[in-house]
Length: 362
Ligand code: AN7
Image (cartoon, rainbow, N blue to C red; front, side):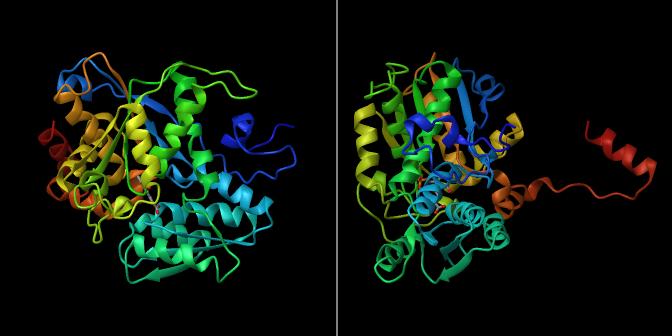
């Protein structure tokens, strides 16, 4: 009988540190849709191909599941009984789900009051041990790095190299689907694990390894986008009090700092940042013109692509992939606040009132 769950580890086994006897902890992650935008390129009147890699359709609604299937699989293989992470929300939801799947315990440190409602709901439902701290993600990360000397827990933040290995498979999927790497790859940057992982994936698919031939010679230009209030890659130094409505990327001390700069330099790419207003406008544009709902942080990728297309930095004729890192349903509060001016009409439950409501709005 075929197995019910086929996740990214099974698909890319030959490129991951997995053996035949490894027990794979999977909930069917990866293989997410790469959707070509149809309406926005027309709207901006530019001859570009923009694809979005909709990572919000992973099992817990974010790209973190790619790394987490690997990190939990390896933690279990190494005999771990408990994992820990600091998180702005998505990592905690993912760690919680994969830990319970494996039958081990997940401890998560989250900044009190600063994670989106959907992420909190998930993490509670999966049954993680939640520790809210009266500080931000960076403080949580610092504590997590210290705690491993005091408690038998495995870190599953993206400083765990297996996380990066799992996440690099998104680049493999893009090349497998498009037949080649895109010209530009745009993504939001917080802790900078994902830009590190994509670049690793693109490099591995374009380089012969001991037992595998290169799939392509091409690599994309990597473009990393941050929120203006949480933009250490723009200021060129760590920042202490990051602030943005895109709570997922409310991070001032990115852990993969050096790797992300290497990705930028080696690919000939760049970093840029956007105000919360610009990020929210891109989120709404994507939902209202393409029917694709991502969370605020994810929309930084589109905000960046659109700015750089408009200025010609990304020239016409380019093929662009934007990673949409998380599902819009993660953060209902921000979505509803964004649509405060579009309140639904309320009418009597009669044929006449409903008819009028329809004809008025056509
Ligand atoms: C939706 O969950 O750091 O640059 O603790 O949730 O790899 O950190 C989340 C990060 C982008 C940034 N988009 O990715 C966490 C966490 C979404 C995110 C990022 C995150 P990295």
